[in-house]
Length: 163
Length: 383
Image (cartoon, rainbow over all chains, first blue to last red; front, side, top):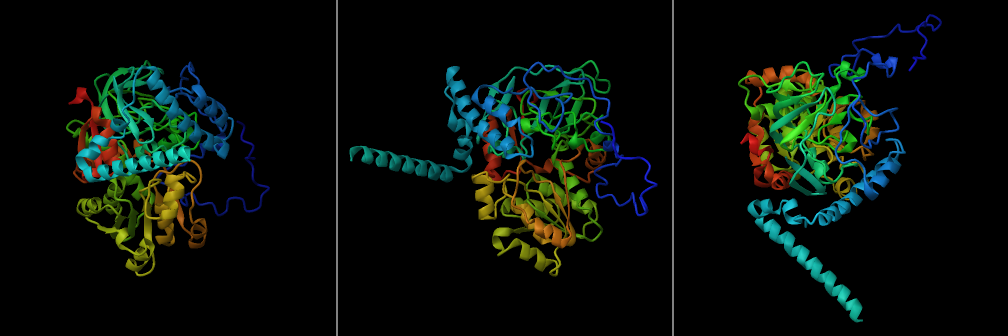
């Protein structure tokens, strides 16, 4: 990208007279070179072959030279993610659909398990064995509350049906 | 290979997954020998980071042995034991060239606000992480550093994130000799930030949290003051009072999105996801720093918005400094500090867990069971 800033500032009275390179709040996090003023101009690394679907932010012109290949978008969640990536990182229309896609993806994950003949062991996945070892009273309380809520819900639904 | 597999909020398991392959000439494949669960992994675990896909493997704190290298790799060789920084950095873009290795512009297609991070959702590039037996490491000549001979692997694995992030938290505070530094959060990062604040000449270091065993730990480990905010009427008033009503010179937010302590923040940030995590610690930091003071933020928040007292930032003339740690930049100095006995990272490790027990490890760490400070997972081949 061409830098549009003029290099000759002699026509601007007082240009730079108070400039102080030591007044740099980014130091020591950043060893300032101001190379960003030259735009997207560096020699890019070798590009990874794009042989899967990679969604990229519309705040950049391309896919990065390397990228992760974990879980490309698929299914309904993938459709929602594709919609999200039509909007910039500046927009709720980017982030909120992504959160929704994540929740849809959880359901897809359970269905995928079933399709592969696996019944997910939710208790093991939630680490309840550790609770049993280190927080037994808490676990019993948690299970008790769940049982209570489930019983109340069943009773409520049954009563409505009966009436 | 065995790998952690995310199934949904608070649901993870160990599964068989295909071994990673070289996909780029600057890749390496690393056989993992240690991987940690980070406090920021809990944001993923709780489903708070957008674009966290089911089936992904988390883990950005790991070390291991290089078992395969791409054709452009010149520095690393097969058999090297390496510390792998959590950030993926090309070393060529304008940001890497200036030392901002956490802000690389060639490692994360999905978001421009952050560089690529191993195992940290697609918002950080979509890379599978190191809570597995093997992991693909891009730009392997840039980030990974060979573990010095004799260094304990438990020290080495904490140099991937905990030590650099805690150190940079203190560094960004611009601590001057004699300064009072307040740190919100007594997790691994807050503990390390407290220890490192002394290295910059702090005159007084105060850590505030609510978890008693962690406060006890940091009090001993970092020789600092440590207080329980649940025993205070208001932590901000406490800080004002203990600094002769001036406020602290430097305040560090080492908590991020999972903060407790403010009901409204907890409900809107953690339960309803109406904001990008609970900003309680950042809120307290702004309000308890002195006028003209510095707030350093290393706690991780989501990419949307937070309830935050911006008016006080302006009115008090506060400088806020924040970033993901630039691990690559800091590693040489921090390796020296570990080798010279100035820093003792491995003392933070309380749990050494087989990789196969990943679900229990997450639950123990998340719920702070069994006095857990830092869990490290060890794959079968490294036991």
